[in-house]
Image 1: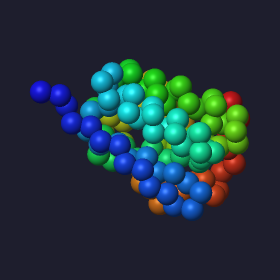
Image 2: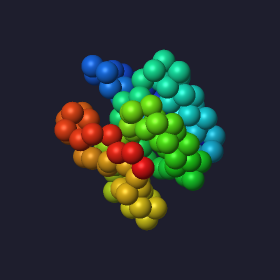
Image 3: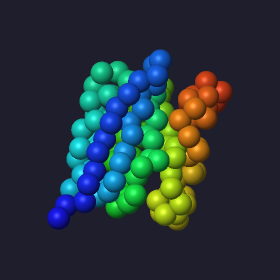
Image 4: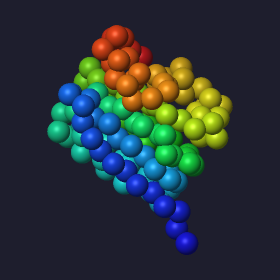
Length: 122
C-alpha cells in the first residue's frame, strides 16, 4: 500500500505557502517538484514550505529543496522551511540544512522573517 502524501498551496500577500503532508519520497517528490516549478514559472520566488504534517522525507524529497534554492535566490527570492516535527527535523539537522535555509517554527514566524531578513546570496 502506498504511503499517503498531499501538497497544498496557499498565498499570503506575495508569499506562497506550500504545505506538505505525509511521506515525501521518490514516489511523491515529483509532485512537490511540480508545485515548486509551477510557482517559479508564475514568478513566485518567496516560498514557505510548511512541514508541520510531513512525517517522512527521503533523499529524493531533500533533493527537491536543493534543486530549487539556487534558482530562487538568483531571482531575489528564498525558500524558507517551517514546522518540522522532531523526527523529520533530525534529518535536516544531520545534513546541516540550517546553514542553507531559514528553518523556523511556524508560518507566522516565517512570514515575519521574510519581512525582517534580506535574502541571503550564497
